[in-house]
Image (cartoon, rainbow, N blue to C red; front, side, top):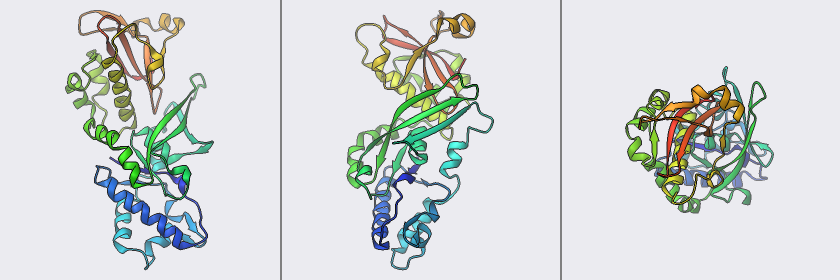
Length: 309
């Protein structure tokens, strides 16, 4: 698992000694985080040239004789290398149908956005009370080339700038490691074990088999499936209720159902053809997970995972 540096936490102080304290704390936090399975620290392309104090950049810190050489060597080995955060965010935009923008308090947030996209952890310099939080909300905006399908959501990003944040994230990190799925083939093979309240239609196997953990959409698919599984595992009474789901769930409009009825009608493992209108979204791309709730059995059939039908 990778960490993603929050470039918004970079600012200048008047004295290089303060900047050294910031970097020392960052490395101390990294060492603790790395013991929990997070290895490479993804940074922005211009990270090395960022000023921490007048005439004192990250590059200066890396050659500063007063800085612990072990920390400098470790930092060179985990950061400042390809792929940079921009490469991760642009990976799916070459010829793709969607453009994405991640913002925090109105500012473009590359590191926080990448952590959101890959369902991973963001890390910041401990230099502002603003970053003294283990969870940060960001705005995610996606616009299609046709400008007919714009979505805007608020997403939670797990975050760390202090050692105590790791204690607050203990359960989340544990679940993240436990539920780590390397590829779509294993997801399919272990679907009954991982998602006992979800029934996958056979068509889903081909749709996920080529995906793996290097694909940001695969991370989002897993996240959305576990959200649906968690809902169904606690579903005891009444009909499926979308408002209690953490991410946006919508139904297809009557006009789209009429137009795409054949594609939305999918054969299920029990031999019945069902109309799949409920869907959640995932990024990057106009990703959709179409599912059909069974209000009697309190389960959901998953019929399609891929680009919007």
